[in-house]
Length: 232
Image 1 (cartoon, rainbow, N blue to C red):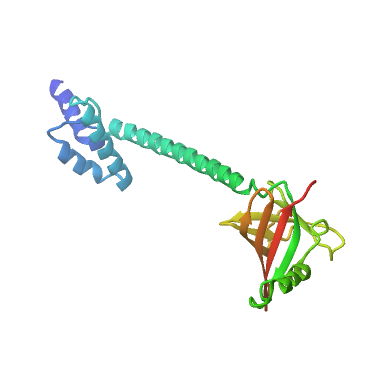
Image 2: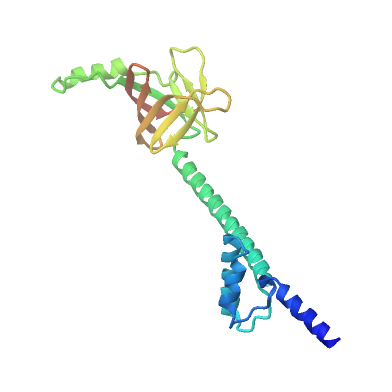
C-alpha cells in the first residue's frame, strides 16, 4: 500500500507543470528554461521582471513561479495605469499652461474696438527725397475713418469687422500664432481657409499696427494698417 501511495506521489510530481513548481534558487536557471518554453515573450519578461523585484526585497521566496507571474502581471498593469495617469496629468497641465499663455498673449488685443485710421498698400512708395510738405499728401490719401472702419477681437475666438464700403459688419473667427493673427471666414464652428493674416508690428494700450496679407489664387495683397483704441 505504501508503495502505491509513493508511486502516486511520484507520478503526480512528474506530471506537475514547471510553472507550478515552488521557486528554488538552486534550480532557477533550469526551471526558467523549461517554463519559458510554454510562455509568451511578454509573460517571460514579466516573470523575470517580477522575480528580480522579489529577490531584491527578500531571499526567502516561498511562492510558485505561477504565483510570481500573476503578481508580476498585476504589478505591471498597475505600473502602466499609473504611467497613464501621470501622462494625462502632464498633458492636462501642459494644456492649462498653453491656455494661460494664449490668454496672456491675446489679452492686449481683446475686448477693444480698434479703429483703422491708416491703410496703405505696401506696393505704393513715395519718393523719400520729396519735401515734407508733400509727404502730408500720403496721410490724406491713405487715411481712414476709424469710426466707420474698425476691428474687434474677443477671447472666445470671434472677430467683428466693419468696413466703410460694406453695409453690415461681419463676424469671423480668429486665432493668434507667433505674432500673426489669422482671420477665418466664419461658417458654423468649422474653420475654413484664412481670409487674411495680420502680422503685428506694434501693439500697446492705444495703438495697434499690422501688416495685412491677403493671399489670392493669382495675386496677393499687402497693406500697412494702423489702428487706435476707440471709446466704446
